Image (cartoon, rainbow, N blue to C red; front, top):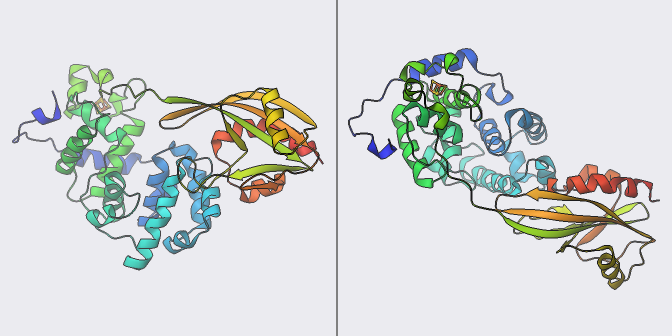
Length: 362
Ligand code: SF4
């Protein structure tokens, strides 16, 4: 059955009561679940869109320690923001959060509006985040539908809609509005997310014996939970070949700032060249810049997967007698990179290999 096949007069089961009761008893004690603070909900939900709960906790704690209020986020230095986000990926999300924080300070006295539709007008806040903030922090009836929720609902009603399609999300959003608790919308939202994360899990068999919704579940009754949800294969990612040069001189490493727009905007990188360069190509390139390498060492190739692109990267550590003049670049010590230069995780594996060359070059 598909979501549009549900008849208008379809009598929805009352899942909210057992779900909310289960959530109140079994919720994991996560730092963003202490009290109801819209800013905390916002930060955690944006971080959780890209990383597992366990990995998010230290990032979340550090972010709030440095930027405890929306005003602090609005006024933060971009380098500091990028540094706090380093390792989470999708840096445009934190830049959008700052733009939204600036609007919240200007328009709403530094308090996120308690209104689903107003939340949607802020940069980087889509239906999922708006629904999470409105319901969890403000106790309003508003849907927050992510992959977890679509999986639970697909199984509960045996729905075969392809959850990779945007239209499917719209259908599930409508269904969630109808199912949501009138009296405890926040615990309903968190409960269904928690159920998807801990019981009605994505990989492997769902733990139906522990599920508070088992008596309502069509997939359980028909023994077809493992075939749901339906999700079409993601489009093939574009593959690009790159070469990284870790240019090192007098104990300093050359980092270049990326352009302010586009992929990894405003972050720092080693010298990044398009295509696969051999050692001879690297020598030719550095010589053209006016440098005379002392050594050129090939590092192990690395790979980084973005949403739509895969970078296959050759890498070299190039030691030089003195720093070269390279556009948008600065030469930094190991201490400086740790303190203030956000290097994206795309370059981390290669950087780790280049470290010994850098630390021993004095
Ligand atoms: Fe998921 Fe099983 Fe619960 Fe159905 S009974 S919602 S399949 S965990």
